[in-house]
Length: 175
Image 1: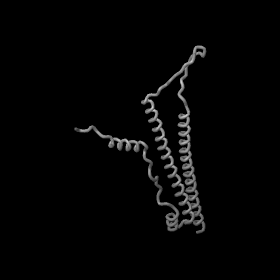
Image 2: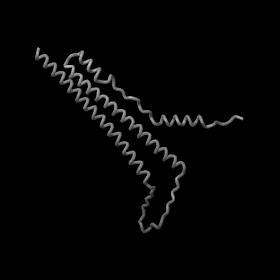
Image 3: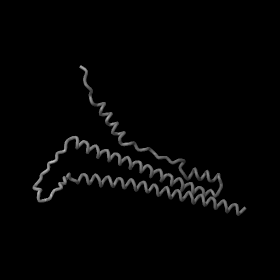
Image 4: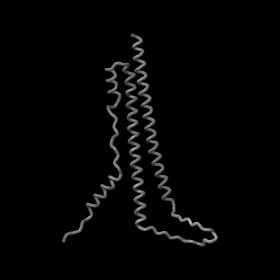
């Protein structure tokens, strides 16, 4: 009888240890997702900060003795300005969307980690009794892990704004 009890305890401890390992792995994955989101955010700041500081330049491949003073006056047209602005805004919106997804994944992994830790604790506390295990599991952990509210794609907002503006623009009047 005592041997059976010891083997049950060793199985419970082994299962609890496996749940703890999986919980630790999920926690590390959550940290990796948050780190990736931080790296993406930092790269965005660096990239757009460098764009704001940079000047347009022109390289001329010619011997320096042949080059006299050259003045280049580069005027940007409205199409260039609008195209550049759309590119920058689109890049930022896409990066924000990626960051939101990574943070959502990190939240999910942290929730999974907490669930696994609590189930591991319930398994150890129950000591093999199924009734106690069910009671501990319901009291110590959340019922389910959800992703929460999924982030909306930034272009959905842009399309919504465009639709609202289109409604406000008066059409041709019928006289």
